[in-house]
Image (cartoon, rainbow, N blue to C red; front, side, top):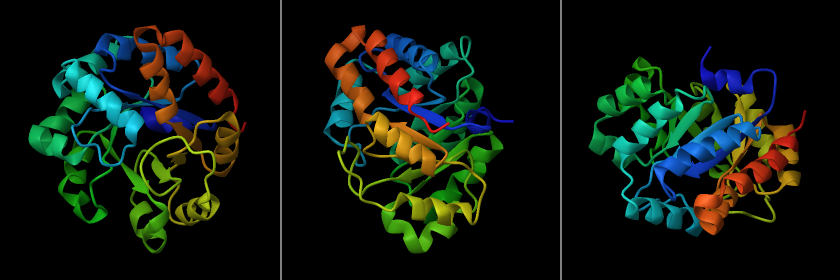
Length: 257
């Protein structure tokens, strides 16, 4: 059984996001371990990119900080390899397609397998173009995580039926960032997904409170928080470990049991 499947096995999953290399890769490694200790089931690591079109200002700023500090894709792979000596928590990259294309699809997926990256979320890869990557990724045991957006209603079944790992249900239109109110009918989207696949679902984009975690983990199989975590790192920098532990503990405790 894959690490991702184990994260959802008989329980709800809390998924946290960090921008790799913000403020340093050494701290990214520390923060992953703190978040796991606090109850995170899976960690997304953002591969910094100069034009992260799906991300709001909080994560955009983190990308700039990371790139300015000298973070590279190869260094992130090295960090994952180091983490794998200490933890079996599932690790999923969030990367933009140009990063994989420039690295080479096969070289990237092989490196994921060698280092212990379990999956990749690619926000700017259209569903219609996934076949140029998915067969290569599956050859190396890497899940390409499917994203389902509120605009996808007529396409949800087609997009979800062959999904592997987990399905990222995008709660709101627009870019990443904390929201006080989410108006999308997430339950309807999850119901449609479950009519065609048993692949677990996790809701992200905008979630930042324990009430939202509780609500959306009762509807789906997990909840994802990104910007609120990255904001803690922006505020406390290298001293973020304890703050991240406290926040993730509170959010993970709010999961529907």
